[in-house]
Image (cartoon, rainbow, N blue to C red; front, side, top):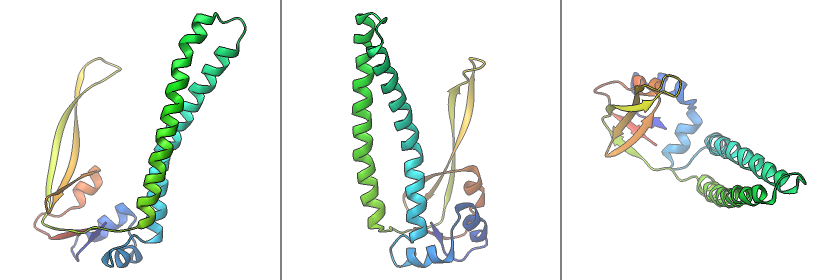
Amino acid sequence: MFGMPTASNDELRRVLHFQPADLEANREGWLSEAQKARLHRIAYRGMRRVIALMAGLGLLTLALIAWPDVPMVCAAYTTLPLMITLVVIWLLRNDSRRMDHEISRGHVSVVEGYPVRIARQRRQLDPDTGTHIDKTQHFIRIGGQEFRSSTRIYAAFKDGARYRVY
């Protein structure tokens, strides 16, 4: 999260949902309880979607195997997605334990300096038209560290101002 008194801090705090209690905890080298809760929600949002998709695929595979009218060859081919599903769920479970441990530790690192805003163009295939379109990705580099950011955060950084990133 961001510290240092600058004119753009109000905008960054608003965009990042950053509270004074968060800043105080970060200055002491720790995540606040609100930040831990927010990181848990963010970390598990994508994981829950993947698990739901993989569980659905697993159930479909089991249904095809159990269905009496499905030829055995077809059922045999569906066991591969079931095995992949089980492996992915097991890997995600291990990742979630690692993330829980890191977030629960709550240690915060600090980077200070003048930001360099970086916009990179990336070519992407548009599935609707079949043509290539350019997408812009935004990054902020401070003190040798580079952070991917949204357009709103990218725009909130002021040129020439010094920042502290937690």
